[in-house]
Length: 383
Image (cartoon, rainbow, N blue to C red):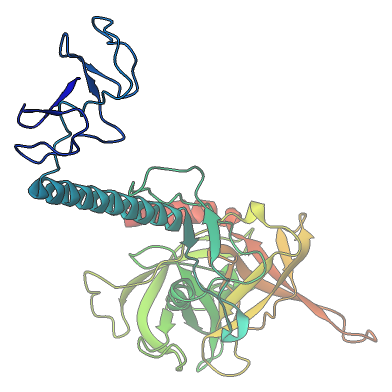
């Protein structure tokens, strides 16, 4: 009869023994292996022949496994658990990082394009809604990009104000020429500062009558401004000026400030605002025009009128406008929407009062016809 060898201590036991007589290790089990009595090889518990030497087993000779899978050590289990927890934590952190980066990228793909505030007539402010422009292409998270500059067109219906208008007001001067023929009276008009040295562009008819005779033989010309801290105030005479050159054909004249009102020398820096000059050839009917000046109508304060370019008189070299022009506006600047000077307010074409419906149109001399005088002023001023 075959005997069972204990896989734990090697002791021989009866073939029908359930436990080792020495160490009490279980001998018969459902998953026990058969130990070949000839070559001691392990075989399946239900094997009929030894896999090594082909020994034929008896049906009842079940042999327990020679070795058992060692039990897992408790410390090893804890270590495995800790490693698993650490791995899970790292995975979670990586996932959160990817989600955060993706949200940063998504939030940076659109940008709000700030827009400037435009001030329209009547001091009403028009603030266009921000325009959201999508990013042109996807990019890696946290990659800084530079916003592209979008070119903007100049407004076509509302003039710019603020600094440009303030500069235009400060560069518009009051001109007074005492009349020799009528003591106590003066020829009143307007001019514009075109150089920092005090060159002034105006109309020739402020200085000479229709026959070409000087209205003041001594050449006395007084220049006034509103108070520096109050452009709404009445004009104040501050300087004296002289005629540099005139153009009787186009009724233009170039003056230069030479002394203070009392005849004392000028300071080194006059602190004058200078007007930028535009291009009158680019004007068209319907363009908006603004005129500044000192018309006698309504008192000696700076006056702004506004209208449109109504048309042109090429043969007479005039621009027509429906903007209000009155006596005293002569020689004053006419502006485009950017407050660049594009002309000189010169005359008013009044309809015959005997007509049933009287009316009038203002006449502006194009600034491009004054380029010879302007170039002379720039040379003298070293600009």
